[in-house]
Image (tube, rainbow, N blue to C red; front, top):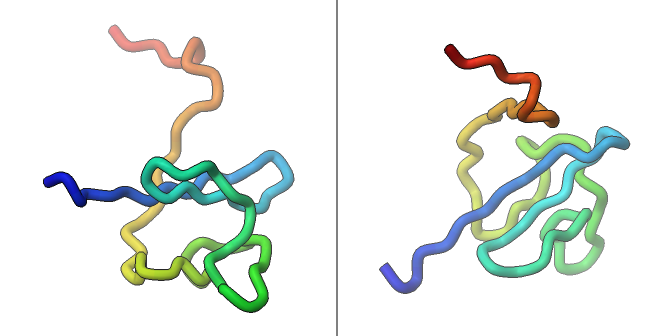
Amino acid sequence: PADADFHWLRQNRDGFWSQKHGGDEAIDVDDDPVNPMRISDPRTANRGCYTIFCGFMCVLANPNLVNIR
């Protein structure tokens, strides 16, 4: 649908997380409108309208390390 959206979080090198809502720019704080905080745990962060935490995925930082045969 035209109103479909997505929300991603990515762990940064410093251990904190950044988030990206749909086509918006990525930000490094949660969605608290009064006191936005850096995200240390996506499961407990204020994610605004994204209230259901689905899970974690792990992707290698260097795709050349993958050896698929």
